Structures are given as C-alpha cells and as structure tokens.
Length: 227
Image (tube, rainbow, N blue to C red; front, side, top):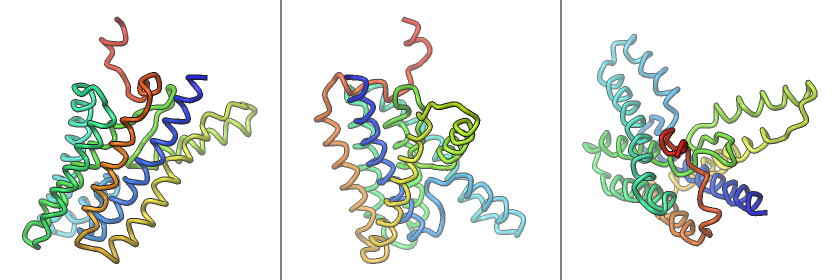
C-alpha cells in the first residue's frame, strides 16, 4: 500500500513540476526567443548560428548549455544537503526565477535568460525516478522515446504497463506550455514572477508529504546504496 501511495504521490509531483517546466519554458521562449530547457534545440541552433557567422548568439547558446548542465549538478548538491529534498530544490528554482523576473531591462536580457536556464537545470533534481522508473521533468523527448518503445514491447507480447507513466511528464509539459504561452502573452513583465510563485507553491505543498512517501524519488550515489 505504501509503495502504491508513494507511486501516486510521485506521479502527482511529476505532473506539477512538468507543468512548471512547460510554463517556464514557454515564458522563457517568449521573453528571450531561445529555449530555456530544450538543450537539443539550442545545440542545433548554436551550430546553425556558427555556420551563418553569428558567433555572438552561438556563444550565448553554448553558455546556456553549460549553465543547464551546471544547474543539474547544483540541483543534485541541493537535494543531497537539505533534509526535504523536493522543497529545497523547488525553493532554489523559485528564488532563481524571482531574481530573473526583476531583470527586465533590455541590457540584462542575457543574464535573465541564463538565470532561467539555470533554474530549469536545477528543477530536474526534484524527482529523478518513481519506483525505479526514470523520469525527465524539463524535456520530453526521452519520455516519448520510452513511451514508444514500451508500446512496441506491448505489441510484441510484453504486458507490463510501467512505460505508460511516461505520458505524465509530456502531459504536464504541454499543458504548462499552453498556460505559459497565455501568461507570457498577457503578463509579459510579471510572467516569470508568476512561475516563481507557482514553484514555491509546489515546494510548500511537498512539505505536507508524509516521510514514508518522501523518498525513492532521487537516485542515490553508489557509495550510499552499498551501505
């Protein structure tokens, strides 16, 4: 029963955090013209900018990719040193988005873009897996690939349905992106702050999750798992 409750709690968290990621991605794309979590797209665009001679923007995108990686690393550090991992990670995301929201001067556009990218890297450490199944929060290509492979295995006779969980992050991302597009269009200056408030709302909500349901959402270091 605890395992089932833990799984359903994890699914709810993934849906909420993926919604946050989709909303922030849409807002960030509206504000900067570049992706804040889709690093595959930024990699391809950076290559095109370099070939076209636009080295400045290409370097900006390479910087974003590096910051996204650093954000993922920072998220793991935060998740490892705070007692309530999900709260700590999402509170950090909220602070980064809040800081980015006040940088609305045109000359600070790149810095704001980088802060949002960093936040989207950090958020991936909030939930890494549900009962051993890998989950991506800010990107859905992997989720859709796992979903498709699961469907293929089902067609070939494997009746396990654990792959169906991969529809959750995609659903959260697309609904969040729709919401973010609407918010970004209607409240451009306040949109990042609204995303920050939503992130803090999820963080505070995570504090009410019972301790028995609050673990096994993060991968443990190999040295810890062998103890």
